[in-house]
Length: 276
Image (cartoon, rainbow, N blue to C red; front, side):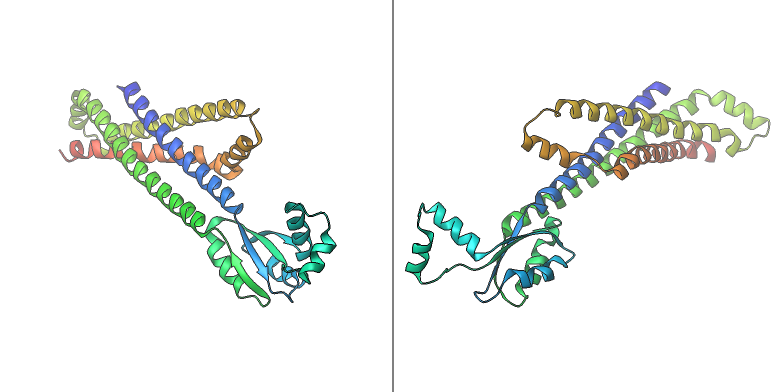
């Protein structure tokens, strides 16, 4: 019975741990992809990027700025059109018709709309463009992921408490004769049922430790498997790596969650017997 309870809690905590870890990883990956989104800022014809770039750089939402002067843009355009005489093409048009452009990278996808609004208000800025639909999709996916994680957590918590409570209740019923003898000699309910409560907590702690061990083994296996992959796969792999804080926090959450589940399950199990 003890092994049945521990193995059940281990499976539940293992699924919970994977769900929590996947949520962290996908959130980091979404932010990493979101930070690659660029806001294109086109200046007025008489404005220069050297004067506006410092103002943008001081914005807390900005991660990086790439300046493309109108001379660089014109040279690139002429080369793409396969025109060898750049000066002649410029003279025919009378002047360089392009303007300075700045490509601004946001720190994450959530701040892109706000950043675009702030950039459009700067003096000398003519147009601000960004992929609005992509930003919205990333935000929706992130929100949906949080709801899925919350739902899984609630379901697993309820199931784990029910399993632990049932197991402890069966153990109490199996030791009913010993409990009756202890009651006859004057033992209090707290003294009688405290070992069962501690037993439930131990179920949770042991289950959390085993679940964390399995998750660590899976992480190591996947890390070795993806070590020699193409650059794009490495980019995704780096995005899926947990931070140091998350790596230390995951086992603590599993152990604490397991102990809480064991405590609640054992309390539910012994409450009816204690009243009786």
